[in-house]
Amino acid sequence: MDRSQEHREPGERVQTFESHGAHPKRSRQNCESQFCKVENLSRLEYNCVEMSSDAEARLLARCRQGEPDAWNELFDAHYSATARFVFQLGADFSREDVEEICQEAFLSVIRNLASFQGASQFQTWLFRIAANKARDFCERQRAAKRGGGQAPLSLQAEDPENGLTLDPPSSAPGPDAQLMNAERMAGVRHALDQLGEPCREIIELRYFADLSYDEIAATLQLNPKTVSSRLSKCLDRLEALARPILAREKSTPFSV
Image (cartoon, rainbow, N blue to C red; front, side):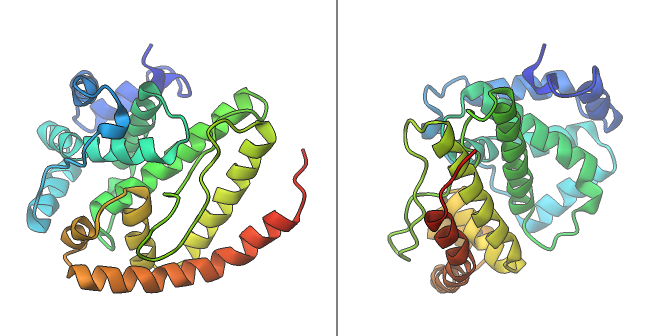
């Protein structure tokens, strides 16, 4: 059985893809082919197919109309970048974990594409869905292990250009440390959600997708200097929102 179906009703995944004109078998093959030459997921390059805003808008319109080839094109264009993004979120995601989370994310895109209004870049919207699916996956893992699963989300340890430091999970945390990390990152996520869309978008691209300033500039169609300035201001806002949460967690003993 496909691991992405383990937490779904029988046949749900196939019905969802077919009802929108996409082909699950082909999508699964594409998913596997993205990894066939990658020995270590950390080496997976950011190789999203470059597409102009107009071209992507046309592709999304075709997806909304239910064209099978359009869904496959969208999958091919964004799968590798999404897989790399998901891999960086988890402390110890396996290849199979990443595949499952990515497939759940794309299923959610199929179900909810009508709600995407273009307020942000499509890729940013997709990454946010993937982050939520990764968090859900980790919560299931923790529940299955009765508190001993993987830490759900982690930002890069430090941005040397802006000085924001958020300690990542230790390489071998015990159950208490893992739960504390989960609480801590949930707090950071809550602070992110309080930011406006421009700040949340640029921080997610920098820390979750691990894009360079030039890549962010290309994605958001901004000047790299504007990216640097905006990111610095947004990090200040995030730090102000997150500091009380992090300070409270440092001063409060954690118990289960």
